[in-house]
Amino acid sequence: MVNKKIRNATIEVYKGITFRSKLEAKCAKLLDELEVTYKYEPFKITLLPTFKYLGKTLREWSYTPDFVIYNNIIVEIKGFPNDVWGYKKKMILKYIVDNNYNYEFYEVKNRTQLCKLIEDLKKKEHAD
Image 1 (cartoon, helix red, strand yellow):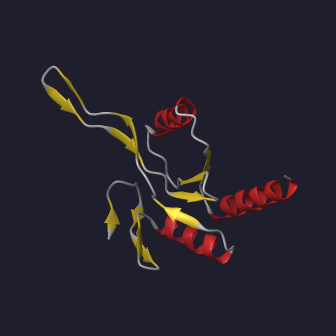
Image 2: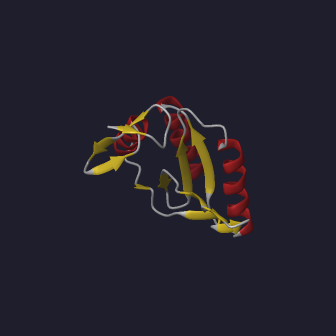
């Protein structure tokens, strides 16, 4: 089944969880292999609420993190970002700052980048 919300994405089920893309499912498998606890799409942030303009209703703009690991690390899996992703990412980061959320945000595009991120986070954890 093709996922129309994500460009070139195909939905995949892994361990009973329906992932929005094969890349997300591969990342979940990798996190399991690396014994990293994660939550998939654990919450939704409303970046811009629904509002009316000149009689038209404009839908809310929201963001759901792909993965949260170590309870405070947001990992966004981005294979092919769309035209608005740069703007949305800035709004996400601003939301995190403005609300004093104790989250770090990382964007990864492939398995290699995810491995590197996990490796760096584990090194950082042991250095603290």
